[in-house]
Image 1 (tube, helix red, strand yellow):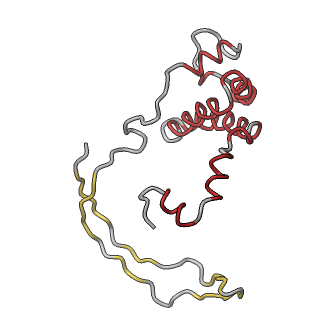
Image 2 (cartoon, one colour; image 1 turned 120 degrees about the vertical axis):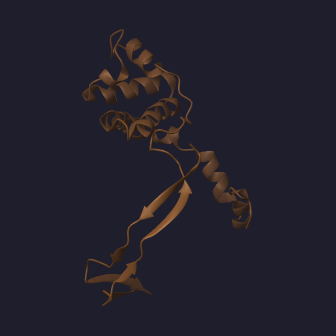
Image 3 (cartoon, helix red, strand yellow; image 1 turned 180 degrees about the vertical axis):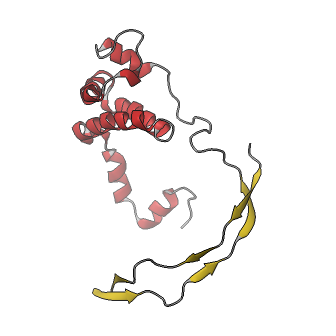
Length: 171
């Protein structure tokens, strides 16, 4: 699957739809006008790496299957044999807060976030439901979810040290 694919790009004429727009330069607002001519992008054929269909690649977030369902059953939100997807949207927010009290806000937020990310393309309705729970945890436990020590350390670094600490490590 890691091979190359041939892409045939169609040619098109590029132009702005609006005839005027505003740009700020040096504290002043300038009105820009559309160019008289549009430019042509020619059709072409090129090879690129095949990355597969979106959402169908290997799962890179480690998950424990049925963990949220187990807590939903334990906390009384679901019956035995039901799945976390069976939880009604009206109860997701309350379940998220109870789950955060049970396992901690960081772990609970990570569980909801993983489900949002992994399902946003393949199962968008379920992802929206899980996003409600993620937002409830983020609103209630914002202080616990913020890595304050790391932010303080980052702000105390010099620009050169910060540049070296970045991935790649070069200034």
